[in-house]
Image (cartoon, rainbow, N blue to C red; front, side):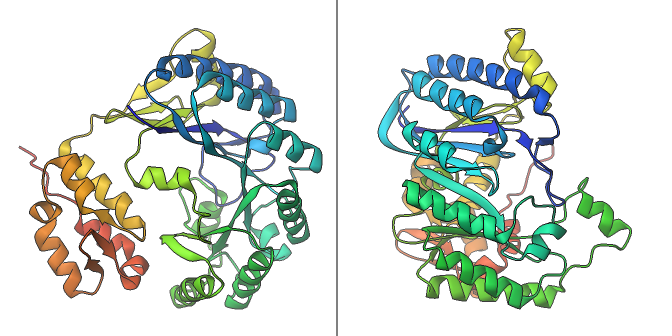
Amino acid sequence: MGDFGVYVHIPFCRRKCFYCDFPSYAGEERWMSRYRKALCREIAAQGCRRLQEGTVRTLYIGGGTPTALLADDLLAVICALRESFRLMGGEEFTVEANPGTVDAALLKRLLAAGVNRLSFGVQSFSDALLSAIGRIHTAREAEDAVRMAKEAGFRVSLDLMYGLPGQTLADLKDSVARAAALDIGHISVYGLAVEDGTPFARMEETGRLHLPTDDECGDMYDYITAELPRLGYHRYEISNYAKAGEESRHNLAYWQDVPYIGLGAAAHSYWRGRRMENEKGLCRYIACIEAGLSPAREEAPCSRESHIEEFAFLALRTAYGIDKRRFRETFASDVREVYGEVIARLQTAGLVEETAASIRLTAQGMKFGNRVFEEFLLERDEA
């Protein structure tokens, strides 16, 4: 099978952010111990099944907020992963964290357990904006957490957001400057999307959510895409910027059609062309494991057309784009046989460009990515 990735979902938070529609729960500490035990059982079972099929190239514990768990519970999960899977050595091992949920003692234990990369959800360095979006930390706590992690020896990434309610371009400039001043290797920047079922969606419905205009968001986007490269962070994916060698190998694998195993409630797996999704509900997931049942459910079978579309969408998110050779090896067809007219049309519009090795988005194509992705949808035979 070769190398693959492992993702572990921790569905707990200290407080749910107002924009978040991820499968995560606040105020459910009473379930943490049972969840950890169930998760470790799933890890052991999956590790046993995969031992002869390849080695783990990347591990990623996300959420939710993994560091919202008790330290002993989080370390038990990490120990189970290291005992159950065959690691390749030198693997990238990332844990997501929120400022305010880590201290020097926890960082020391994580590093000793083999974690080598931390991804902090900072979102902004404005205390007013942090409060407005439901974050539990302050700007000062974010800076302190990042410095502490660097001093401990971790590679560090942090997330920022733009298009937040009440946010100005000046706010964003300050956050970018303060992030870069921390001298970290990786910065992700995401535009706010108001998702159904979130507090922000309810506020929007009642006219209480005051967002920047489209033009203001466009100015923020243009600033990010110009300033971060000027500061030494090259753009390797639509929302991700890194210094040389600091790219997230785990996320790159998602975009490059590499198989992965998802563990925990609501986690997804992609294995031998099949996609699986674990039980989303916390209680149902735990009940499945405790009853000795698999929590995984196979998603609708992926047709060749669906696989081609997804391959194209994910690859186009990266700066490299669609690798022509890998496309041919995967689908036994040249990318131009499938998408020749689409590519020509998008080239004329200045949204994609072609090199000897790939088809990739231009800077303008990155800005209007959704428009490009729609063009790569294939006609389905409904008969």
